[in-house]
Image: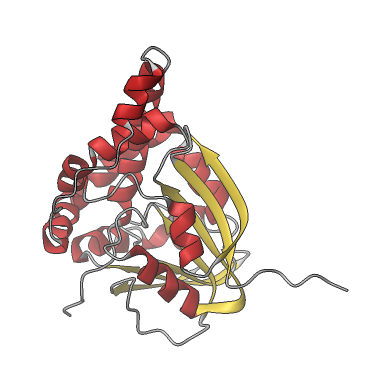
Length: 264
């Protein structure tokens, strides 16, 4: 079926996260050498010019799908992304929704003693075909794959206990709208688990991310310089756990629909 384009393929995001770590590391090393004035210059906002269309970016994800696991395996190993994903996904429980699932690289991390079912969506049909081949990694967890846009899903309000997104916000065409939709389908006492890459806490590193954003979007389909924490808060989510790594470019977030209610 035809699906409006607004979400993005998971594995592309995961690999660009690893590449983002490499960018951050190189930039940070250079930042120790260059003067503060150069840092200020490089940290200016990106040039205001159009990025590739959503259709063009989806073509990037479709074209990368078949060989993506092989492509990202080494990058994720040396950057520690795989360990972070495992730690995040093992928090999932109940009926789970994974958005922008891509090739299903998280499937083997779900705990069948805690997870009842997994619904996985992506806007790339080719990525979903790769994910389908990994169904055995989830057994005995029930899996439902769905071609869908994260910013507009047809699930009822308050449908899921846990929502998982690994390296998706960087690629959503309308990230706040997508996060609001995730919040809508989350149960009142549910949790949203996010592992993302985006804006750095290091000014020099952020300068490199800003300067390369158009080239990066065109090649990998994602925006590497987004302020993930700000976008999450704009969507009305409350952040319970907030960890940053790799010069601030990797975000590990556990979120809820609303702030916790203190016991009296």
